[in-house]
Length: 145
Image (tube, rainbow, N blue to C red; front, side, top):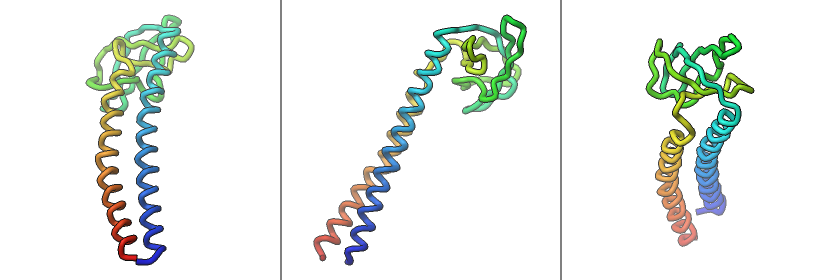
């Protein structure tokens, strides 16, 4: 086995580490961003009743009217949109400073923890055996060199 093959194995291992760590960090950042959004909403909270215009697992569109009579339809949808149906009327909490930042009333960043943790677990369930295999392969090549 050549030195270039061994170097390639090391680069692949490094790549697996980088991807696994990056995905884990992104999952944690997602949860932290959700907590930041919740804090922003809590610091200047408004409450309204909204109509669900479209419903999906990851994104749902809503429209609601603030006390000043302005109708808002946040372009990024509502935070924590699970189990909504089109036409449903729901209570929402929004930031008065930024009415496009809106969440379903009674939900918060804690609902993001399980999906983020699941992503981290799956990433490492795939990465660790891959890293183990690559390490064994590299040791085998070193032994035969």
